[in-house]
Each structure stands twice: as C-alpha cells, then as structure tokens.
Image 1 (cartoon, rainbow, N blue to C red):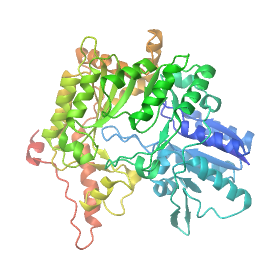
Image 2 (cartoon, rainbow, N blue to C red):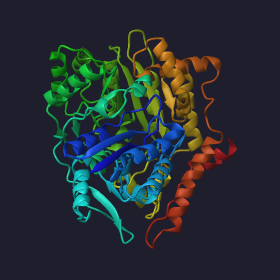
Image 3 (tube, rainbow, N blue to C red):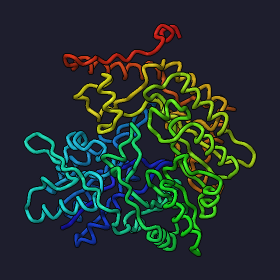
Length: 527
C-alpha cells in the first residue's frame, strides 16, 4: 500500500523538534513492505495545504496518516491551539482523496476521542504506532474490520470505541530521522537530532499522561549499546550539531542512563548532547561529571515546584531538599539547564508559590563559573482526561462531566488570588533574569532573528541557553514585560469562572457544585 505520513506540527521556533515518533512509524511501515512517503509541514507556513495537495497528487496514497504532536501549547498565559490547522488538513485530504485518514502522535493519544471527533478523521492510533498502525493497514488491505485492534480508536454508530494499547517491548527498528526529514531547517533554529532510549514512566504524577495513554506505566528499555549504535550512525552520516534524548525521564533508572553514558565515552567519535526530561534525583557530582564527559552540555529538568507541599501534591517522588541538592551540584558545573515549574496546582498557596520563586532567586541566579539556568514558570495546570488531576477537578466541580478537553481546561488552586500570584511572579522576574514567564512565549515570534544572531556569534545550540542574557538586557532597557497581555488577571479569572459555571449547570443531585472564586476577592477588585 502507498502510505503518506504527514507531520502536522508547525511550531517552527527555537523550541522546534523533529518528528521522531513519525519516523519510527515510517521505518516500521516501510520494513513491512509498504511504500512510504513523509511530508514534513513544520516549516511550510502558509504553503502547508499546497504542499499537501502536491504530495497527494503525485503519490496517490491509499492511506494518509497525520501526526499530531500537541493539541495546544499548554500555556494559560498565552494559549494557542494547534487543532484548527489539523482539521483544515483533514478537510483538504477529504477534498483530494478517498484515502482513509488516520491520526497518531502524542497529541492524539492525549485525548483520542476528543481529537478524532474535532478534526473529523477516520481512526486514531494511541501510543506505539509501530505495531497498531501496521495492524490497521493489514485490516484495510484485507477488508477486515478495524475494531478490536489494540491501540486503535474509531467512531461507530456515533459512539467512540478504543481497544487499549498493549505497549509491546521497545524493540522497533531505529529510525534514520535524517532520511525521512530534512534536518537543516531544524538545525538552523538550534533543533536537535532526537533519540529515544526507553518508553514508559513508573511515576504517577497527578497531571501527567505519560504513564497512561502515551507510553504506559511499565518501563521498556532499549539495550544501551543499541542506542549508542543508533547515535553513532546518525553522527557519522548526518553530523548533527546536537543529539537530544527525548525520554520522559532520561536519568531514571540511573543505571540505564549510566550504561548509555559509559558506552558513549568508549566510542571514538564526539558529539554534543542534551535531554528533554531529567529529574532532580540522581543528579550528584559523579553523575554530572559523567554526563559532561559523554558530551552533555545542556538539559531540561522538571521538578515542577520547590515546595514540599506541592511536590507531595503533584506526587513527584522527591522533596525540596533533593531539588536544592541538584541545584547545588549543578552550581559547580558549566551546564545550561532549563527548569520547568507548574504553579497553581491543588494546595498551592501564595506561600508555596513564593517558596518556588525564592528557590529560583537563591539557587538559579548566575554566578561566576556556575551553570547557566532558565526557569520557566507555567501558571495553571492543563487538565487532561485519564489523569488523576482531571478526576480531582471533576470531584471538586471545577469542570463538568461532559467537559470538552479540547477547550483548554485548567486547574488553578482556589487558595490563590490570581492578580496577586501574577504580581509575585513578575516581582521575581524583575530581579531574576533567569525567570521566563508563560507569556514570554510571545518572543518566539523572533526565533529566526535570534537563531541567525546565534549562528553569527557561533553560539552552540540549544539557543534557549541565551534567554537569561536577553532578559537581563530587556530589564536594563525597561522592556522586560512588553509582551504581557492586557488585563491578564481578569482574563484568567473569567476562564476559570466559565469552567465553574458550566460545571454548576451540569451538576447532578448529591454532587457539590464548583465554586472557583479568587481568594481575597475584595482586594482583587481594589487593585
């Protein structure tokens, strides 16, 4: 069969990422004997529909697979939905071809029914597409029913049916990402060549989908030598500027990461490495030294809070002291580290929020000879079906049972006065240029300019390492908060009230209605 696989992600900025999941599926599909073409629309801009029409016209696919990386940017302070673009692509396929349209990717797996209904595709593949998508192709070729295939969801007689994925061992053929995707535009923006060493997550963070719909709770590790063999082939063939591990938590279990690092050190070639997800546990001086020796120069770390109350609420599996220990260990290194914090979850108060802000000011400020840090602060926690936080929001009446997850639903602790919380965050950002606020995502509109400047100055990627210096310069010029949306606190309060009012209208007898009200409401009206 002729299979057209389309990367629908068009987030072409400094945080851009090549579609590694799509490349895994393309490799497996080709190995199964199908004719495969990959269309990457990341940098297509307004020409996306035109490029899609050209591919369908020249290739005449029997099946079109659309990879959905994210449904939105999960940023309450500057929300952006990506699904309208996906829906337009589905409609374009419908106009040009009778081929079935199948959705896949992490975004589709987050909320398969909602995404499938919203964009109007024929089926959705949840989690590991290397197996489920091939089974679907076999059923299509033989004229058999798609129902009952593990990991495949579809709508029959107006009802959604999903057979749960079986999460097979992670032993799929390694994809040659550079074969399927032109890496040059990604590298111009500081993007990395992606590698995955395992799937699954044993943690049970209340807001996260990795251990349920995306990759399952059981860790499925690849052999460290096999992982490094894949990296070696990519380094020698494509010479990427940076190789990025995209595991949900790269440094857990620590023995698996250590085996990979030691194998890299044994190889004769050299490469620069980074990682998408690292947790504070196991980041001692010894492990950091080994990471540096292997070629790591940066990574992202996701504690989500520096308050014991909130770390316990989020069920992170570590405490504030361990977050501090990681920061202190990093203080003696030259790593560039991007920290992610989620503010506003269950139990968040102005005191716990300040604990996180004080941590940033005390431990992440630039010192001579120390690591360079960026602390991204997200306000409000995005609610996703199948998570414990979603179920808590239902019990508390924050969202209604029929709530549409496509509509960017949020959890913000009722203990917080939104205006005061934003003032706390901005006060910290005004003296700590390492802090990046959610609405600073507006600066990504200048990604091409920033990337060009970095290349001119011969700065190595990832280019987010320079956020601290840009913020410091903006503070000196009085331009630090120029992208702050007007009436931001009022907008957020209105969003939360609408969620609660919808929940109240749908409340059943015996259920406590939602009642999100900003704390100290009179003070809010007076500011």
